[in-house]
Image 1 (cartoon, rainbow, N blue to C red):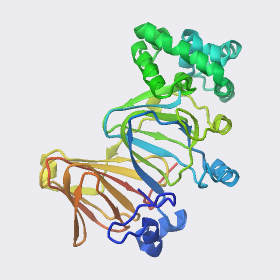
Image 2 (cartoon, one colour):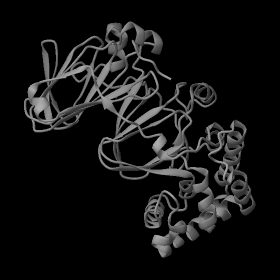
Image 3 (tube, rainbow, N blue to C red):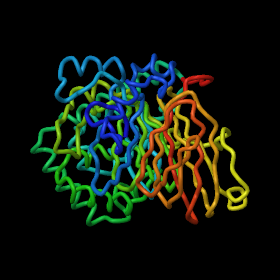
Image 4 (cartoon, one colour):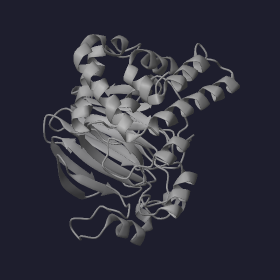
Length: 397
């Protein structure tokens, strides 16, 4: 949902693209948003239903995106960066960012096939370099740690296909036989049975894939319904299962390196990553109540909610509204920027001025800048997500 030229949204009434509509009527965007983002929507809004693992990937920062697009426009179709936010609408699991370094060292010591594939000497060098130094506040030590992580990760990613196949057989056999004790009982933040089941599951989807070993470098994350995480440009990740709302900067650039039949770009992936390492808790988001909305009495008495997911970038924010009674109503103040509303549960209506339209699960509406919006529930629960961009009064990192 958006104006990206690869697949812009269309107005069902006129069959015109949303890109055409906002370019013909700049007031829909607001002057500030239009000027800053080139007369097109600055975000893409998505729903993902993940039945099979999605690729191990990262999205380039703005400078790298420009270079990749210039050199290879087929595989990198635009010149924009792509930070993104993920909000779970069913239980979700995935991989996100590099694990704390001690956890990676733990897996080198307890997963023989991983250490063999990376290289015995390389794994030992990494462990000796970072041992008891990953929490150091010294900038030089952190730099040394990141270089060590990059070196050992590059060693893994450049493994020969025949070595990956051989190591995968050994890894899957260990997962099947060891169960609870797999990978040294799973390490500090996982349990052995969970990890062994995951390896078996992922191998059934992508047999003998390098992603089976990348898994031990990345945080394994679970999100419950309503939980969210934010991924900066150059953050490595992979989504494994579940249904999520995604919002991201308007880009289709993906640098892939595993769990995919699509184009892989190992060289750029290895060189582009930040190699930041931290527990997954640091990337999870803490939504807050959205202040610019008025709920009617029915909504208040039913404990309806409007919560804001506000990442540290200018391109987008998302509000989730859950109206939990028939007749519950939420009135949103006008904002100086465009919005897209999506219904994920129940049915009701959306009103802008005198115009009122029905809303059902899967319905999507674009709302232009400076419009007051009213949502009203006609079911016992009516859930919508609103992606929007508003630059006025926003302080972003």
